[in-house]
Amino acid sequence: MLATSYDILNIVLAICLVILTIFLSWGIYYFIISAHKIYKLVKRIEAGVGKTEEILDIARDKLKHSSAYFMILGEIAKKALSFVEEKKVRRRTRSTNQKK
Figure 1 (tube, rainbow, N blue to C red):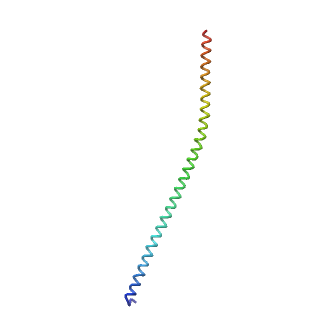
Figure 2 (figure 1 turned 90 degrees about the vertical axis):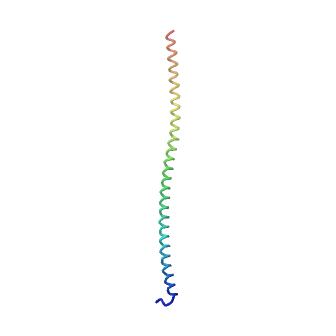
Figure 3 (figure 1 turned 30 degrees about the horizontal axis):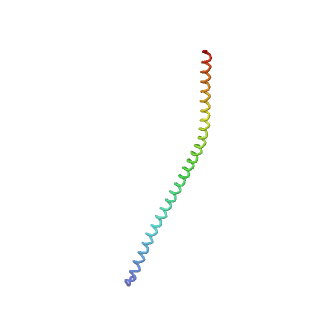
């Protein structure tokens, strides 16, 4: 079976090739698993970024609409204050006219 050193060399080379194949297969397997985990992580990050963009869009819209409401409320407050001031002036003039 092992007649010459050339036969032993062929057996050793075959065993080394099998071991190399096993290690390469193992390395490729872990590389693929790592790539798959990275892919899942990227998808989760994209989903999170999408949700935060939605939240920011909603907040931006609400701020735009609320600023319009604040402007309306500000105008109402100005008119209310001017109305109160006019009433005070009228009361003062009536009270001074009644005293005379």
